[in-house]
Length: 409
Ligand SMILES: Cc1ncc(COP(=O)(O)O)c(C=O)c1O
Image 1 (cartoon, rainbow, N blue to C red):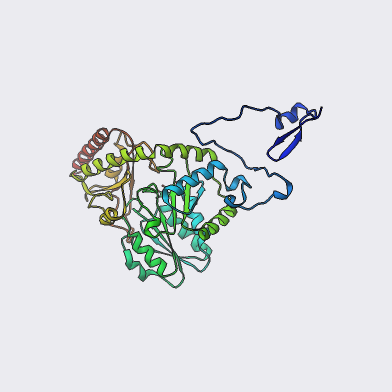
Image 2: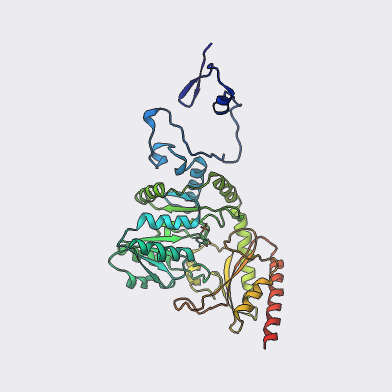
């Protein structure tokens, strides 16, 4: 007897006899309903089913029209977007496959040929490279400003300035920016203020309350938290920005993997305890480092020695585990590299925000627009190892550095 079974709003004639090959694709198996768990399900999918032929649409705004295509996010992606947005206090969030793709999507969505964009000298390297190598090629004017400029940024505006990037604290040199002052100047000039909010993990700095229009984060760092995924987010303050970003996101096609979103949702659940431990450990290590005879300066926003420390105190509610040290003049580049190599617990590698401590040496020699730290700057990412062990590791590396230095004399 023919019986009809309903899937969604489509029904199938299940009495139709099916070849086993067809059963591989169209199975009649049913499982018990009512499963409930504490975990957001991982919905994978490119094709999204419509209930009837007339309902088919390629609209990207799935909050408005329902699910249309996996590229615009499955429920897993949208759950992560919603949770990032909730933490940052924005209007809506778009998830991207990495922090850098969030940066490019913001630029591609909000700039056009003939516009001018202002970027801080302390910006994340690939953000600068994108501006220099791609935006300029597309006829966008790019200029750089000193991160500590504050409201004096007004003098850098041109009639066509459309967007001002902020990153606070800046990458490697860690300058904390007066974001409210910069945003106020941008708004007075009819421009948008965009912030890379990765260091604050979206929780230690309330970007929208401080005047920012668009934030992005590399969720790769503290939200993911375990160095096993790449994801980014863009959060906007209103619907008009959401429409601009969403429409370009569709065309750029930068879809995030639901599996990575699932990992990020898991990472988020423990972010508070990880951040608390990492913050305390990083602060102890930063203070200890500031007493070391080999260290000229510790660039940790919560220490007075960091440019913009007063602004950090005014605007932030906590600090992350990434900071830099500047070694005293006299240590050669090879000695600085040997210092990093002699660390045992600190691994050497890019990215940060995971549970493993990392160290990377940088060289700003020849950059007139950057502070004169030259080759003496080392960025540390503090993980979840025991703080005393990390200090002991740094101590033995300093001893080797001193030995190398005295052998040279
Ligand atoms: C401040 C900052 N923004 C953006 C990014 C880019 O993130 P992703 O590596 O996910 O592309 C990074 C990565 O190191 C970063 O440090």
